[in-house]
Amino acid sequence: MSIHTLLVLYGSQTGTAQDTAERIGRQAQRRRMRVRVEALDTYNVANLISESLVVFVCATTGQGDPPDNMKKFWRFLFRKSLPADSLCRLDCAVLGLGDSSYPKFNFVAKKLYKRLLQLGANVLLPVGLADDQHDLGSDGVIDPWLLSFWQKTLSAYPPPAGLAPIREEEKLPPRYVFHFLDEVPDKQIEHLQTPDNKAPPTSLQPFPAQVVFNQRVTHPSHFQDVRHIEFDITGSNIQYNPGDVVMMRPCNAAEDVEQFCQLLKLDPKCYFTLTSTDSSTAAVPARLPQPCSVRFLVEQFLDISAVPRRSFFELLATFATNELELEKLLEFSSAQGQDALHSYCNRPRRTALEVLTDFPHTTSELSIDYLLDLFPEIQPRSFSIASSLLQHPDRIQILLAVVKYKTLLFKPRKGLCSSWLASLDPSTGDVYVPLWVKKGSLSFPRDQDTPVIMVGPGTGVAPFRSAIQERAAQGKMANVLFFGCRSESKDFYCRSEWEEKVQTGHMILVTAFSRDQEDKIYVQHRVKEQSKLLWDLISKKKAFFYIAGNAKQMPTSVCDALKEVFQKEGGMSENQAQEMLDAMEKTGRFQSETWS
Image (cartoon, rainbow, N blue to C red):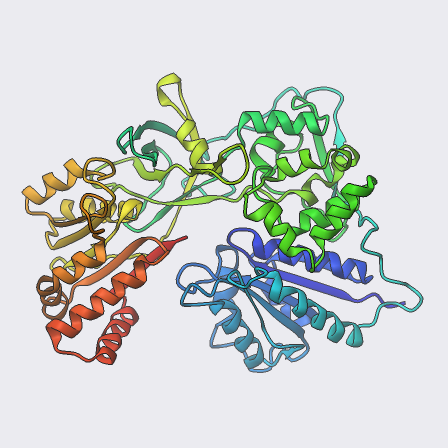
């Protein structure tokens, strides 16, 4: 009896591609296949030539870049030295997860698909390009793509004779089994240790940085709470440059941890160890100490306050014995029920914890062993660093907008990381945040005289504060900042610092306060007004141009304004202006970093 093996490899930044990869893994198990699901960078890519069947699931980040956990794989795969038939024994398929509101839509998946063909792989079906903007979300593409994938795969790799597929309503075994300990282990080092080596901190070995200050920088009457937070990184071996980002993983709120433990009848003070049920992946999640307390698991690992994905409802349905609850869970798991699930979950931003309270019978039937199948791991958040080591040695500063808003639900929605950071008060005692630093997508010119033009409305100004501080310390005077916010008196971040640097001749500041007059004035209007200055800096002095901030319409509007400047001052046609902007982007003279 031959059992076929499927390898699912994923590159995921926010966890969605990982969730999809795990879903494909479960479908394979139900079809009686052996399956391994791994992040691309934990997989030994040299083994790829001896695999028979692989699915690649990958997201695209930033400006068409591969996610962090597939960067090594990406470099290896694009080596010029790989022979053209290296993968001729491989059957594979590529599924991309993207968002068509970004210009480099699913760039990574498309490029990977082409490269696999170049290396001689047999691609079973066209690349799947899932799109968040689709009416049914990414599932609108993923569901039909998977149907087609299984048709192709099962005809080439039929299941063992006489074995029927495992039905959807039957439980698959959990990935791990919990073993509770009778007593508390004597020495427990769950809190952070300072790494004693000289290596900079990483996601698995973050540095516990002390919070030095945490101040609100918007007027008390302003609707948005924005914080200026400073961390002490003395002794961390962290070096960073303007444009780099600091990464941190938030904790769940104490009240959520307590409610979760009550719902599932868990004692936060209990300790457990985990064993894997699958011989091929014996590893326990690297961030969980062994033994581990329930409190650590629920507070720092399980993402209980995120809006759950469809896979959460699929698994929950296998526990339901109450007819009403089962019917609802099956609807939410089905392709036809995605609209209903959207209205129940995504639109009001209902959390996984709130879903459990809505399905009390099913929650009471849950087996603890399935917690790690049900809840994803809390993902790290990234913030642009808003300071320079030349002006603030041993410090990292950030500008943080605290996320809080109303939906149909009674309780206001809160951003997990921003609420947690905002709640840390250094005046009440020592507070530490585990963090590490990652190279950002913005880089600034080394040359002393190259001017830099920066458009950073709102918290988009953060990386430019870092750049201006650094450049001022290096005696680079040609800095132009376009800053925009609602009101001069309410959310004009870093005002005194800018005014001081303008007086010392270190920068030119152009402001747009959208609500301080009848007509709304935004940064793009100011860019057009400053056409002479900008054209002179860009055409004669080879200036670099940067945009950072919220990705709704702002980046496009600023690009349009810049092209108008080229047309007006340079006497160009619309096409020539576009070509000039494209050329600047190719050579790194135009860069943008936007987030949604």
